[in-house]
Structure formats: structure tokens, C-alpha cells
Length: 452
Image 1 (cartoon, one colour):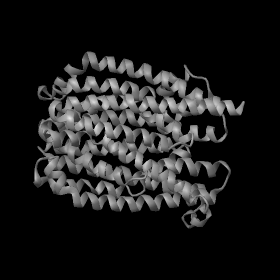
Image 2 (cartoon, helix red, strand yellow):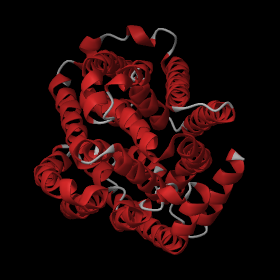
Image 3 (cartoon, one colour):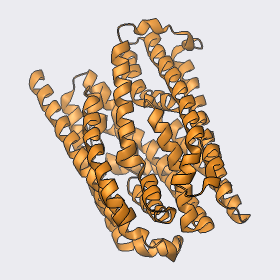
Image 4 (spheres, helix red, strand yellow):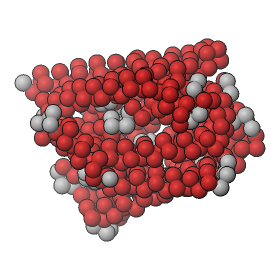
């Protein structure tokens, strides 16, 4: 099934594109697409079973528990995948295995430390999360239980980056499918046995833990293959003189991720806190359906970033511009057609699969699709700036957007609820992405002029 999805994806895009670099991006994203496609189908089945088991309100509570842990984890995270891709990739290009291993080692240590910190925060803040977001203090233990996912992800970001830089996208895809399959089996068992919120939380937690450990084991094997069994002894002092640059990159990506907690990652929590878990249930479903539109596009940033980093290092500016242009055209066409399908058939699909009580999610879905059209079309808006050596710019843009959005949330969400939250998220995409795209194109234009 995975090979079928990947081959179909590759044939469709290869018939349109002829550039070797683009085809490599498509091939790698094809593996991720196959995983994303299968995982999305499995996730939809999981969501349908969970929604029917729990009802709207508890479905919203489930969203609060999972998003709470994700937000706390991202708060402490340094997005080590991006650092590993950039710097392990640079050293690998020149055959410096010792320094490449040292970067991965440093990234792993930093990520392990941040994971422990993140779990500690989940443990401490769980009572507040239960009170403010789930509106039920008795759910605090389930916040802590799901928080074990954070510990399991102790070096998963670094692991993902390493597998991407060595084009092991097929392995990432296999882990993704395995995780989703396991979660579906557990939720199906809970459904058949009349389970409730606790059983669903446990099922999601076990699936996430299995996926994280699978990625980590796969990446450690890859590190051994690339650098030998003693790679972990690579001396950190080899990076002397690069410390400030590495720290600056990690801090900027961390700040950017932290700001995104306000801009787009904590939507359900705002709705739960300022309104109620029932509206959060509607919004959780709207976000899940809107995310389906991103399914074929979501692998592209992961597959594109390593290639962009390599081409920037080689100063092949024409290739960089070609990849961005062709990718945007294809992403726009797909997103427009998929959005049109949801516009026409979204309402009856919600009623049939999830039940009539979830129909209020449909208006929020339509609002979100407007923002996702922009986000998909310019999926490369942030990764291009990272590859061009400007990780600070999207951070500044996100900071400005966060200030505006916080004011908007406090003014709009208490009045308009989840529909207002959907409108704010769509507006965020319009504002931030347009600025990032403009900056990327200006930098490319400048570099091409210098090269000439």
C-alpha cells in the first residue's frame, strides 16, 4: 500500500516536472506522502471512533489534553531537526564525519534536556490544565499520563533530522504508518469494549510513544552506519568557534516555535479556556478536516529543506527558485480542488461519519480553508529563509503576529467563540506568510545579482 501511494505520487508529479532536483524532492516527499496519506486515513478512522465514543464535549476535552502536552513540549523544544539538517548536512557535504557526528551528539543532548524539562512542566501544570481547559479538575492525572509522550520523544527531532539529511524518508514513512496503525487498533478495541476518555487517552499515548521510540532507534542505527559504532564519542570541542552560530540558530528556531504556540498551535486551548470544551470539540473536528487538505503538501517542507540547504551551499540559485515556483503551483492547484470538494460535500460527510451533533464544525472548516490555501501554496515560506541563513526573520514576523493575535483572541474569541478563532488563524496565515515570501524572494534576487 505504501509503495502504491508513493509510486502514484511520483508518477503524477514527474509527468509535470523535469528538473532533477525537483524530482528528488518529489521522490522523498512521495515516501512521506504515502505515510501521511495512510496515516491520515487511519487518523480519520481514529477520530470517527473517538468522536462517537466520547461525544462533542469529551472530544473537546481529549483535544485539550493532547494539545496541552504538545504546547508545553514545543515551549521547551529547540526544533533540533532543522539544526541537524543544516549543520550535519554542511559537514557531510565536505566529508567531515567527526564534526557531523558531534553536531548530532550536541543536538541529542540538548533535546534530551529539554524533554525532561518539558515533562516536569506538564507534571506541574497539569492541575491548571485540567481546571482551565478541560473544566474538570479530576482529569489532571490524564494530562500527566499523556505527558509521558514528551519523555518518549527525548531525541525524536534530532532523529528525524538525521534521517532526512541522509534521504531515509522511506523509514520515516514506515514508522509513521506503524504508529497510526497501532493507535487505530487500540482505539478500535476501546470502542468495541465500550471504553471512554481514559481508554482513548491511553491509546493515543501508547501510539505516540511507540512512534517516537521507533524513530529514535532507526536514527541511531543510521548514525552507526554513517559514522561507525563509536560516533557518540565524537569530541564536542571540534565545534569550537561554531558554538555561537549553533546556539543562535537553535534559539531562533525555539523562539519561533514558542511564538507559534500563540499563533497556531494552541487554538483548542484558547477556545476551551475562553468558551468551553463543547466548542473546542467542534473546533477540533474542523481543524482535523482542514488538516486533511494539507495531507499531500505537508511532506514537502521536510523533503524540500535538505535540498534547499544543499543548493544554497552550492550557490545554485536558479535551482532554488525553480523548486519554490513549481512547488507553489502544484500545491495551489491541489489545495483549491480539495477545498472545493470540502465546500460541496463537507457538511453531509460530517453528519454521516461523526453525527449531526458535530455539524456546527462546518462553518469553522470553511473559514480555515481560506487560510490553508495560502499556507499550502507557500509551504516553503519558512524553510526557504532557514536555508538562506535568516532564521531570525520568520521569528520577528511571528512575534509581531503573536502580539496582534493575542489582542484579537482576547477581544474576539469570548464573543464569537471557535468561529472567531478560525478567522484569526486564517488571518495569521495571510499576514505572516506574505511577509516571509516577500523576504525570501528579495534575498534570492540579491544573491542571483551577486552571482552574476
